[in-house]
Length: 399
Image (cartoon, one colour):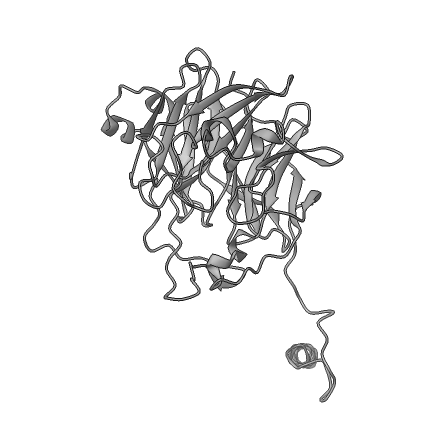
């Protein structure tokens, strides 16, 4: 009996001690009147070791691409900033590319100059392609303005200019990004997203003939989600004119990436959380009825984030920007996602480019801080930045 009472007494003492410790943990640790600093308070942790490669104190960039021998090209659309050259190569200094003269818009012959380049991409043959919207400050393009321009990087000479006809590049069209499969046809094919809020879709180009055609125009997978709403930097992201009511930002098919085997084209409306893919065989056949092309569209699931850029690698992974989170996600072939980058410096990640050096390069341009989203007040803070992060993967090479 005495032994049992002793054990009970010890257990009660232990219980009381534990209770006192728990009560102490719940009580504020600072005495009354003592100031609290943020030094030791919990905060969010960054993910990914991102490296700044270049900064831009002039116009705002949107696109980047890296050649197979490490040359870096960046483009600057003419959205309102003073843009002397809409495409530049980064060397010891930034140089107009392919030359300064071709970067000057020619209003009389828009097909013979760069008007406003939205995207630059190096293909599997190490050639640079420049996607020209033909639109300055969102004004309707002139005939000959919307085009795809190819440059031979071994000679730095233009070898191809493909002008889009008015039934392909519609008055509402905004040519956004492009991917290539050089195994198709005699010289390959290009796939381009038209990200306009009205009549969005995908444009297919035969690089040998220059023929082009539209697919999935106003299809549910290319259209912006009508009730899209996103928080960016903690603020509701909406079009906010200097006068008048705010309105939703409605942007159609924007990000684009091709699978490592070239069988599927991935894409997503910017104003959406969904990821889609479509058969490239169906897209590449201009004789196939539209409903049969649409039948090959697959909803690849919800990304959980709003995305501007997409990219793929040779291992079958997909890279997804998350402009509403300041992050970049990596989607594995089994449709699982992991966070590759999360950092407060990633203020609107735009275009992605997988390079031969095993890095993912990406532009950060503060697009959400533009004046059109803040009642005419430009909140952007220079510089804009080109970052990279190690991924230990190679680019998709379809040739």
